Image (cartoon, rainbow, N blue to C red; front, side, top):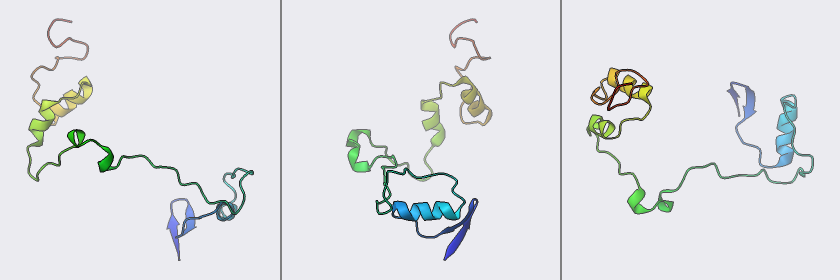
Length: 113
């Protein structure tokens, strides 16, 4: 079975070897090449894709899931963004009050500009 993607038709199974990848690329008109030093029988590399497993994060640093219906406004207000444009947008959206936010960009929060 084949599926249609934005770039064309691809097989449902991902290539497993360099040779399979080369054949797929040839079917697509060779939009890019594979390192010539690699053998057709070499498996495709499978590098880590990022992220972090929960068990790798110390318990004291793990985020605690919020209960459904939790007051997110209080959470957001407890740590407003430093970006003045984002803070102004959040005030506009009603997520924050404008208390302590400079009247215009460039003013210090506690004094005159």
